[in-house]
Image (cartoon, rainbow, N blue to C red; front, side, top):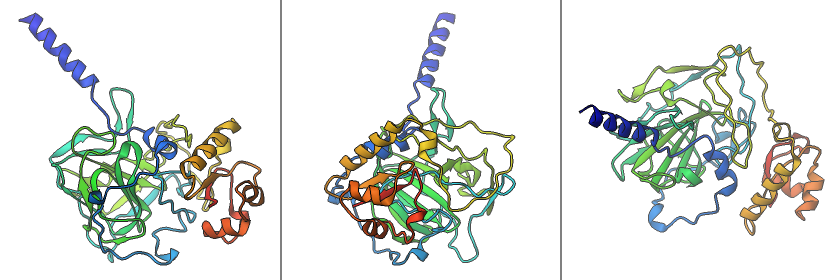
Length: 342
């Protein structure tokens, strides 16, 4: 009997250790370089008639994000987060907003946010769902990205009016496109198992200025309500990752004794500082250029580069680069910034 019990416990231990994880902290950076342009099948797109933004002032928190609006990637730039005395308060639903909606009907949370027993870091929560369950926007906002994205599969990213972004991954179908304005509860697609996923799941993330934090800090999934209508984040809540676009992501450990951070707006963290080896940036640029060959072409600015030098390299003009990126001042570019050149 003891022998049988020992064998049973060993099997249980192996099963726990072998727990599969769909998305890790590495996934967003691998996808930044490795995700090809994927032509979605007609049956995967059920386009809605939601209205679209026509001016940049309609984009939520456009100035807060340093006029950063990337429709191709989940996270391709680091931003300075405006903490005040190491605190940042978000109002989840303002009086003029529609009420919060849970992202979909689900049976349980199959995998929570945080480190796993295998040593990986899971940047969201996985909701166990039935196939083809309707997925809804949790808050009012504007679609920033809607596409196939590496381990995430078919993914929708929505930016909300308080600066929060929510991520909905492993979808089977999409019915939104970038720029569409949504109310909380508007349908954006349906659940599936695209990407690195073996069973129907909704991988759901909450992010602020590109950095993810535990969705359960703001959402009580058991009762399908908000924890509170205000959320106070500190630097230890946000898992900031070094922007190594070749996939060697390093998750900075939570720092419970972090010193106050002086608010700094409209600045970026230099990729050159994070990756001293110049060839890393050069390799990323080469891969990005190849990935978008014949279509849109992007460039990661290196330290010391000028717009004139970049324009010459890509056989275009500085005026055209400024137009493509909606920039009116050439001095506003910085090392580490990813810009469109064609």
